Image 1: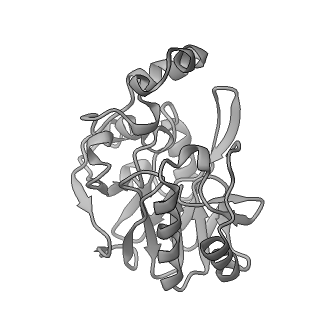
Image 2: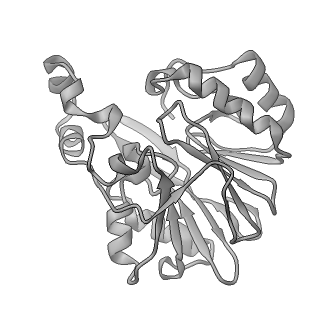
Length: 251
């Protein structure tokens, strides 16, 4: 789905662990740069390549990958992508999620050691394999709050923790687009706060969303639920002030 020239929401359909869902990485590009934001689940490299080609950008054109946070459905195909792209490209992330993405620490939400025996045994076998040996890749460049990447009209970084300690969002100045990662979700065009079940620090997550109020936003892209482009300012204010969130769900 194209938001504007040089900004495409990729749609990665997946059925995993009994759940069907669509993940929404974002591709941002211009004449000199092509940045992929998040990388889907393990095994989705072919889907990423196809979605990029439909947008008119080959995988080989990538000049960088930004990971909004450490969760499995965001880092899943990162190692395969880096191997396939045919050249060395930098991976960007926040310093607080860096050790998890690199595999120095187990992913916070899928660490087998944090699960009871019953929880572990209740998981499907493919899930156990991913949780026990999650994908990992080196983070080459650390992104900090307020930093701006001087590509594609300017990409500003916001540190928006809560869903994970190092969760980041990205504001595209040229198109007034906020890429929200998992800090919020969209359900049929309606904006909500993050899923409580998968957000360890909801108090911090609430404070993070208030940071968006300082920006002039025409589009919000949620990794789960996709594009919000109707009544954006009103919807954002409703979430930030009155805190509309969901306790759980299949996104």
